[in-house]
Length: 474
Image (cartoon, rainbow, N blue to C red; front, top):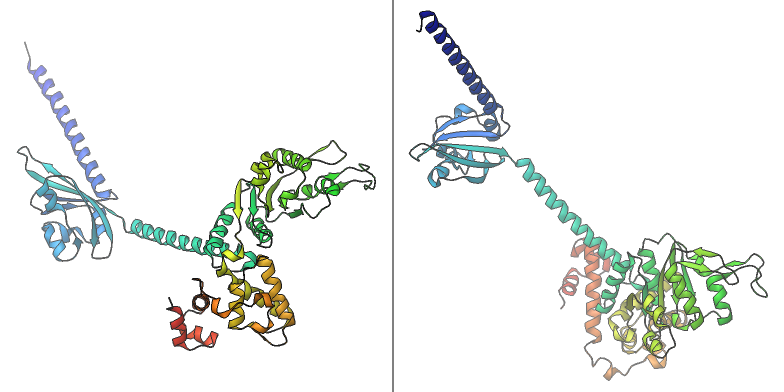
């Protein structure tokens, strides 16, 4: 039988349990209030009709508004006043789904918000909870990053253009598309250590291209050693290439001699006229290229070499391979990246800039002030130039030092350079069109340097209207 004491004890335990649960609920409520209030993100609460019920400190900070300015007001008022654009609470309630948006505030901030609907037991939207975060700094950083990327791309393009100009033979800004494509390819190849085979007629500038590739390479601080395989007597070629040990043959130095290949260590070995290399030395050279080692004449010691190989020839090595005049294995070893330099007669757009560049250098060297007449330039343009760039430069130098007056005219040219006037420009490379294009290029480059047509006109001693006309020339 339950006594009074038992009942009292039971009631007391039940009361303590309820009190403990009440205290726990109060603590939970306090915790949630503190979490809500101290959340770094803004928390905005509205009822299903869009009336603001609660905002935390993060929300006040995001919108730069006090809670009393928001609570109790319909969200549409904030948009009408220009405080927040767009508001999304009513849209969340109407569409009954989560919605995210980017808001802009009256103080210029960019706020990222996400609204979530809460439903009652009947399925009606009873509240809308909106979480907000200030992304102004993030947006500014993204915009700054985009501008930085654009600036870097611009600088990279400018640097690429400068590097391309540096790869022009003798520093001349050539106009032909064939040479521009070749320069672009040479620039890319320069950055790696792969073997390069430069082909082209005598005088087209193969050595100049090789020097520029070395200059733009990672080995530019190392030596560039040129070996003309056709200029060294065959009986001396092996010892010159590979060196020799003391007493290797009659007349050899007692201390021996380092070969040219060894001197290219950490640099570039330029094998000019490679097609003239004897077959017996082709075998030895191939071994060197494969193993990166050299064995001197009369010796057995293996010397390791670290070098990059560029070869050049004015002969068709493939035909020589077919005729068993050149080893196929060496040919394929050298011909990893072929660069073919076209003859000057196939790129006549380059004759004017090459001529002007040579003339400027020679005038500076000899303190002259020579210039070509229009008729003389016309004749230079129509000539076929079998000796290519080398012949052109030699002719310019001859005319500079032999012409008695500052103006070099047709009468001063060698007879074989003088073209019949009636036949001079029957092809599309008509003289005046080329001159106009060249003048346009000069004026455009001056515009980049001086900034406006008035300054360009002053520097070039032209009228401003002439400068504008030349820039707009077709």
